[in-house]
Image 1: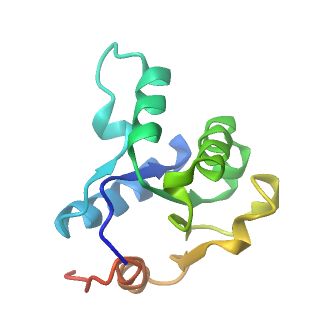
Image 2 (image 1 turned 90 degrees about the horizontal axis):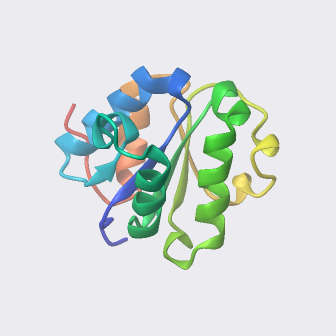
Image 3 (image 1 turned 90 degrees about the vertical axis):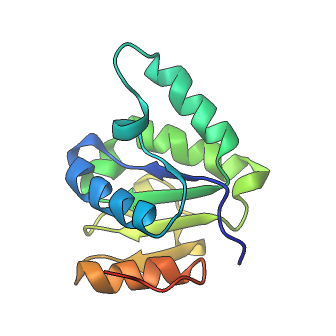
Length: 137
């Protein structure tokens, strides 16, 4: 699998701490990613920034949790990714907490899932394997 040009990290604001940890792992392994807490600063138009990032990224990483399922922005981001050709075969669900994923999309089970409900390092190993990388914890 070729390395991503850029990964869009979709998450609920309630999962910010976990998403930051995922971002730190991606960065430590040289994977470019877009993350709202890192890439939207000050008075930038966040709506436009999210749209621009979605249009240029080629991988979609969804941090799944009950908060994500309830987030209308996570749903908007996912629906965009599901409809765009660059994301075909490039959607990965980071299973952070048990959640009713069908409320986001009944199609989510068709994509790669990475289990982060047990150990964070084990989840990191599994996630990085998606791109053929080894985990350096």
